[in-house]
Length: 338
Image (cartoon, rainbow, N blue to C red; front, side, top):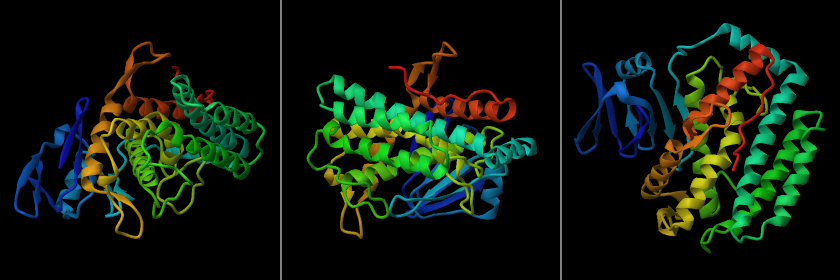
């Protein structure tokens, strides 16, 4: 188990197998070997479950009362779903606004373009940062900048996602220049299963960003089932995937570069005896510790004129989307200003 303080609330990560139970007005985790650890619910924001953990109905009802989300990952580090308590900020008005924007081609396309533009510009910020530090990334930067110019003229979600795909392909191609470790080379993006160490790390990082965005959406009036760039369908959630595009470079990829270039994670933290390659629990813990530090890190917000954490930036992005939907306020995605 790994408990990391996230400002006033804790994010709890559980790697061991066991059972979470309610006892009086709190929770405790009992591992398979009988070890118990109490979980003070008033200080818990969310729980990430990586081990085989049992719950009963009484516990789930208590988690709902305390508005604690539980995210589940399987043996292969894939995100498999969330226990999403009854929405305490549920708003029929906001659902109607989201649905209307989704069904209105121009409005859906407008906000979808903003998500792609924000992701691309944040990716460029990172590439330019490393280019200033001696990496030869000019050709890739210029290539992505040319793709960014294509975003505005797209007339459908399908063609927009094609442009997004080209941007990502170029961006990931720069990783081999940024990462100073021959074990972590990048040929192409592979997901289920990842075919190399770097793809395994990218997939794990992206899954975590998706869940952090879902947790922040839960604290707003937005409905996570109605996305704009990612189509709304029978998949449970899609809006968190949209918002995550902006923050995967800012939070996730910067963490990947940190753990690899500082030697925090190496090839020994992976298991490649399976159908693909996955992070061992030791690697997951190391990555999560550095990622949590990134989430808690603060920057001076250019509009609010005060320090806010990267985790808080996700919530602020949700608020901007709400304002766009309710007031037709121009939505501008968060872009790093360094």
